[in-house]
Length: 120
Image (cartoon, rainbow, N blue to C red; front, top):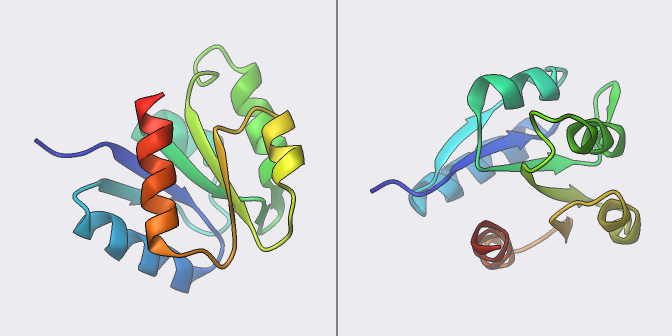
């Protein structure tokens, strides 16, 4: 039985490629969107179990997207893990992210957090 579906919203192509490979190796279904893709549309289209989203996206603010997800009846319960090279964990958690990863992070840290978030 396949593991959960993960949607990656990240503007660094190398990071998307690395995360996709690592997550697939762990058995997750993985979808990603273009660097300037509409995250809200991708969430509706892909119906992921969890969204891994960078705080700083090309032309978009991950924190604003997180707020929009939480305000929508359709997406308010989506599990969201935020990531950033800046320490904005407090702000992400205040906006009701399910978890935060400070870049750079180790794959094991991602997998542990994913399991915790999906089990909640």
